[in-house]
Each structure stands twice: as C-alpha cells, then as structure tokens.
Amino acid sequence: CSQKPFLALCLSLQTSPGLSPTTPPSVDKVDGFSRKSVRKARQKRSQSSSQFRSQGKPIELTPLPLLKDVPSSEQPELFLKKLQQCCVIFDFMDTLSDLKMKEYKRSTLNELVDYITISRGCLTEQTYPEVVRMVSCNIFRTLPPSDSNEFDPEEDEPTLEASWPHLQLVYEFFIRFLESQEFQPSIAKKYIDQKFVLQLLELFDSEDPRERDYLKTVLHRIYGKFLGLRAFIRKQINNIFLRFVYETEHFNGVAELLEILGSIINGFALPLKAEHKQFLVKVLIPLHTVRSLSLFHAQLAYCIVQFLEKDPSLTEPVIRGLMKFWPKTCSQKEVMFLGELEEILDVIEPSQFVKIQEPLFKQIAKCVSSPHFQVAERALYYWNNEYIMSLIEENSNVILPIMFSSLYRISKEHWNPAIVALVYNVLKAFMEMNSTMFDELTATYKSDRQRCGLKAERYPLILFISYSEVLLYLSPSMQNPLDTPLIRSLVAP
Image (cartoon, rainbow, N blue to C red):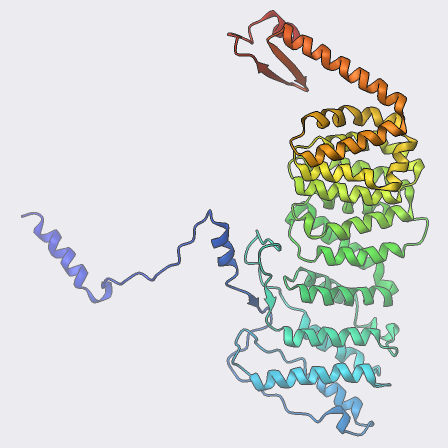
C-alpha cells in the first residue's frame, strides 16, 4: 500500500511533457588505447582558419579596372586602391559564402604580384605604408589552437590554413616587394619595425608547412635588408628556442628558424662575438634534449657544424655538451647523435680531436656495444670514413685500448651477424694500424677472461659492483646467498 504513491509519482514523471524520454544521440566509440582511432579523431579537422569570422552579411567589393587598362599616370592611384581592397578578409571556413568576391580578391592579388614584378617606378613613398598595411591585415592573426599536444608529423596530417588561396598570394606579393630593385629600406624601416618582426615570428608556430616556408623566405629577406633589425631578430629567435626547450616543448617552426640561422651563422664575422658563442652553448646544444628532435635535427646539426667551421676552438665544449645530453633510452635519438657527431668529426682539427678523443671514444664504445643493432651499426660506420680513420690511426695508442674489449666481446657475443661482420673489419683495421699493441691487448683480454673463469668455478656466484648497486648472478646451489662472509666482505664500506 505504501508503494502506490511512489509508483504514481514515477508514472506522472514519465508522462510529463517536459520530461519525456529521449533516445540518446549515437556517439562514435573511441578506444583510448588504439593509436589508429586517436589519429582518426585528430584528422577530422584537416583545415582551419584563423581569420576573422564574417558577421553573416555578404561582402561587396567595387570592381576596379585592370592596371594594364589604365594610363600609366593613373596606375599609382589605382595600385593604392587595389591594395586597400585587398585588406578585406573573407571567411574561408564557410565554403559557400562570398564566392564571387573571394575570386575577385584572388585575381586582384595575382594582378598585384605581376604588377610589382614587372612595372618600374611603382614603389613610391606613398605605397610603403599601404603595402605593409595590406600584408599585416592578411597574415597577422591569432593562430588556432592545436588539436592535440601529441601531434606526430610522421603519422598525422597537419592542419592546413583554409584561407591559403589568398594568403599564399599575399606572401608572394610581399616577397616580390622586398626583392624589388626599387625597394628602399630607409623608407620601409618606418613600417617594418620590431613590432612587425615580432608578429612575423609568432606566425612560425603555424601548423601549415606551406606558410612556414614562405615565412622563412620573408624573414630571411628582412634580415638581409634591415641591418638595424638583425640583433633584435637573433634575440627573439633565442627567446623562442629557450621557451621551447625549458617551458613548452611545442613550436612548429623550429626547423625553419634553424634553417635561417644556418645562413646567418655562415655570415658571422671573425672573431666570433661572445654572444654568438653563448648562443651555441646555452641554446643550440640544449635543443638536443627535446622529444621532437627528429623534426629539426638536420638543421640543428648544420648550425653546429657552421659554428665549428668558423671557430674550431668551440669543438671541445660542443662535443662535451653532446656527451652530457646523450640519450639513454631512445635508440632513434642515439642514431641521430652519432650522425651529427660524424659531421663534426668531418671538420674537426687534429689538435682539437686530441682534446676530446678519450670521452668521445668511451661513448662510441658504449654505442658499439648496444644491443640495438642500428645504434651499433651507425657507430661502426665511423670506420668507413677516411678522415676519421686517419685521426684514429694517428691516435691508435689511446683509442685502441678504449675500444678493444668492447669490440672483442661483441665479435663473440652479439646476436646480429651483420654487426659481428662489421666488428671483424674494425678489429682487422686496428690490427693493421698497431699490431704490437693489438697483440698485447689480446693477450691481456684472454688472461682476464681466464681469471674470471677460475673465479666463476671457485665461487657459486659472480658479483658486479657499479656505483651503489650490487647485481648478483646466483647459481641454483646457493640457499642464502646474501648471508655469507664473502658478500659481507665485498659489500662492507
């Protein structure tokens, strides 16, 4: 009897017009552990636009005559009017809006590109502010946020800029403007200033590789034309890299900025300034620590080599810096480090090689001993380099003792036959370089192995002490291996 009011309440709720049951919308199930499904979800937005959204009203531009159809005396004024028209921004995310006007602006931009390339006397003092204004209106905008912090350029498609049909022509026009024989930096510097450059650098974070490629050309031209902006550009790139390394680890345009820096470093005057050396040690070397190194490693290695060709005395701090940041758990990065190290050794001075040969070949010995065959293979390929071989031969009395035990052990124990074959070639090369030392090291190694063998027979365990760790390899016959006088005597401080 007490349940009747409750049942009546439930029935009234079910029949209430405001609370009628609805069928839940269908939702695509995404397996959080499936990289394929995550990647599919990411790829839903293949295009994005960071341009201003229109307010729903159609945009109307007054058609202007072609520049070639008016007398030359009227062309400068018409040129300015067309520049002003091209400041109007369209919404490209709405593919059906303003189609006619979008096409009109595109054809106008094409006309402006041709006009500034062919015409003479078109860059009057009045055109500079209008050109910079038109370019600024089109390219400077807030970039859309990234879809995912785990964007993988090797597997995921980049988000392309929807307004690219107009944006590309604006960049093309600006490059022709900067490259024009009539371009006067003394006039342009009033409008292309530090604020302009700062906004330009922010655009390097665009996900669209096409835009970053144009930005690279634009910034390079500005660096070449405006001497007063060079120090500022270098400082801002420095700040971008520091923020990338120590704060965000996310910036899409690192490779492009490094490519620009490669040509900048190539033009540095000698002797190098202290600020340039500091940039190498404090900024470029730490760039090796980021997870996304593979995206810009080729450009980074080029910059490093450019510095060393300018000033060989920087070789030691650079190589010691690489040793400091050498990857411990990522074989792919280790292969990249080995490739960069070979590029450095290709340009190293023999006097500088002597200073770093011991720590360098201790690291190479570790790489040769790596169970990951690509790491071992990349390290062993050093012996195919004629210049590196000449350096090794000159210093074989130092390098051979460092490398010998690793090479000899690998020749007997490595799982990959290709690595074993490469090691035999290296051992053969060492034997030809210094046969006397090779025989001595072989005899010493064998006697050490025999002593280890006797110890293994005498004691039912082998003890390795490394730093504060004790690793025990126990035989099945031992009941209480830790409670023995031998262990207590070896482990006691």
